[in-house]
Image 1 (cartoon, rainbow, N blue to C red):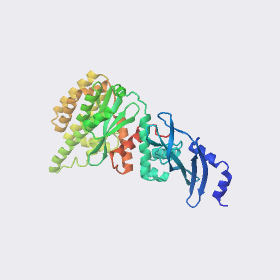
Image 2 (cartoon, rainbow, N blue to C red; image 1 turned 60 degrees about the vertical axis):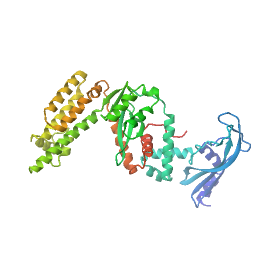
Image 3 (cartoon, rainbow, N blue to C red; image 1 turned 180 degrees about the vertical axis):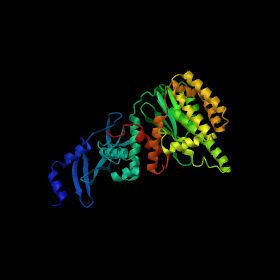
Image 4 (cartoon, rainbow, N blue to C red; image 1 turned 120 degrees about the horizontal axis):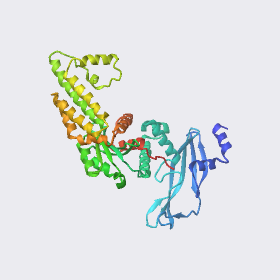
Length: 418
């Protein structure tokens, strides 16, 4: 007698009951047979419905008549490293409306090809691996099947999501794939969860994103953190006219860094013509932070700064603006902003002047920070995780799969079957 037969002998009395409990099978269903195929390394569980079972129309409560029976099979959790499959004939009943419907079995979703236990197991693997392909290999299923589990979990999670009031949200863009394919992401800044994702970064996309919120949720929004992207500004003004727009400090820092780098590139080209390579390869020297001024790189940077270059002047103005965020009074912050803009205008550095003019144009939204000290820092952290998901996927073929991944991992949804 081989090992498997010995196991079967040990548990044959209660093995049907074991699988009935494992699958959550209740009347009128019962496990009638368990077979072990050693050659194929497979357990085959047969479930049958008791005779003369009366089926009821779930909408009317009236008796339904069986139209036909269909043989169906579901993948269950492995048993002793053997694949386990469940097979049953499931009735299709005729409803009072005249339509036919397949009866819902207690161990699986109506259209699912996995048992509830197996689907929850796959969800857990997906959450831990962050890669669909890796999860599929571990679970012993196809990539398409893993994608299907993820999609169903997201649909289920969104349907269960409670309408919690949102007071402070962030709107940000994220590149989905190359060739300027973007998604717009709405983030709850208090909980750090992604609320929704839509394709594109246009005004229409942002309006669609905000319009997806239930009325009572959107009415509770007090402030929206965002970049100074005209499409987003216009969308918020139209859909959430009562909400304050707060221009994100990290995006402002990004704009100032970009202006600084434009000054560096222009000056580097001019110096190169004169045979001076002082700025060659120095891009990140001007952009990185230096908490420890004793390092070799910091010492070299101070030497570069002492050369009184235009880039050094731009760097000083950029660093000076950081003081703006240290104010606690809106009026004093406004005074600092105006003085800083005037100093930039006197610098004759065109890229920095253009950046200062942009801040002047969006002054109200920048100063709103002192009423609502919010940033898209949570969204930026989410962007980092999204990049990880995107890299793991080696490029996402379409927006729907991108959305599924973002909401699955970052939506804080209740994903599993009960």
